[in-house]
Each structure stands twice: as C-alpha cells, then as structure tokens.
Length: 173
Image (cartoon, rainbow, N blue to C red):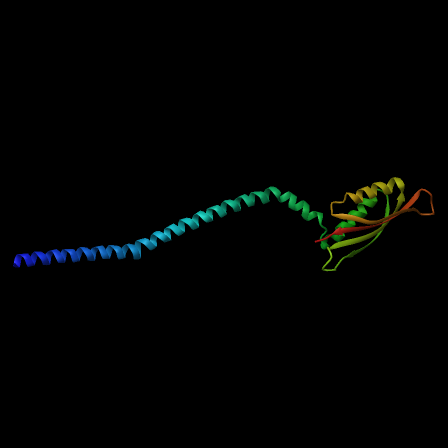
C-alpha cells in the first residue's frame, strides 16, 4: 500500500508539476510572446504604410520637379505688388521700342471680396504704324491682363498722330 501511495503521490506530483509547467508556458506565451508578436505585426504594418507613403511622396516630389517650370510660369503671370515698378519699366521700354510716348496712372484694387488686380490707365501717342505694334505688345505681356477700355482718336494737331487711351487690369497676388 505504501508503494501504491508513493506511486500515486509521484504521479499526482508529476501531474501537478506538468500542469504548473503548462500553466507557466501558457502565461509566458500570453503575457510575453503574444504581445510581442502583435507588436511586431503592428510594426510591420506601420513600416508597410510608411513605405507606401514614402513611395507616394517620392512620386509627388518628382511630379513637382517636372512641373517646376509650369509653377514658375504661373507664378510669374501674376503681378506681385512689389513688381509694379518693374512692370511700369517694362511698359516704358515697350513704348520706347515702338516710338510711342506714354503717360500712365496705376491703382491696386483693395476690396477683399473682389479679385485682386491692378488697374493701369494709359495714354499712348504716336503714329498708327507705331501704336498698333505697341498695342499688340501690350496684349502679349507675360501677365494675366485684360484690356477693359480702349479708344483711339486723332490728336487734332497732326493728321498722322493718334492717341490711344486704354485701361488694363492685371491680376495680382
């Protein structure tokens, strides 16, 4: 009987030790390995998302580089208020090139609800052969321009001289 009791105790002790080992393994798995596994899976997913974002940003960066000239051209098509002097200098140089005398006034629209634009009112005096190329050059200025008023009349002093009055609106930033 003593052998039987000892055997039973050994078996129960072995079973209890094995259950404790299984419990320790399960606890180790659920509290150590499984959280690490899920953290690694989340880190892989985050890495994958970051790689996708990096790829899309690289594509966007290449697109911006390819379109840089277009953006520059569009930006230059608007008259910045700081560039008004250079614009007036361009007008005067164009007038001199076409042998036209030019007088001008300028104003900038400050109404916050209206589109921003500069208004230039000009009077050009010269021969028909000089005023028409000047007018064509005005149409081809490298800015978003809109000629809102135009009148051409003789000066009355000389039959070969014309006077052109025009109002030009230029979009500004």
